[in-house]
Length: 91
Length: 93
Image (cartoon, rainbow over all chains, first blue to last red; front, side, top):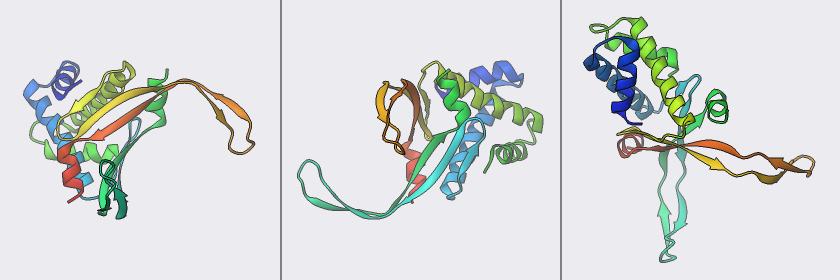
């Protein structure tokens, strides 16, 4: 499923033009990205939560050469599906 | 940001083109469609944001960590999200 499929599905159900649907979908995903960029978590009830986690710097190894390397502190995004979604995919 | 705050923001940004009710319907339909796609086992690919896919974990013999008793863990499906390049870079900048 791609963005194009999503737009097609929603356009058929909601009854606004395809162009307006596409704009709405772009705006929704943009807003989610901007929110996460500002380090605010995004919680979609019934779907799941997107959380920003700060990882500390640590020493790692290059698995190919065995050399020790410094892995710098960074921020990563994790997604935790809601119980509703977990139950849905297992039903 | 919760789903209702997202609905408010979208309704605000798109006030010229649609009502708040439309924004609400679109957002609810969007996440329901995504859930149904995952239920079917479809992979969802959203350029810039990331991708969602479903994997199946086989049944296995586990242990109750409290009592040490062996328990059968049923086969189940789990969802994986892999953030896209754009989102990864924007978050870690």
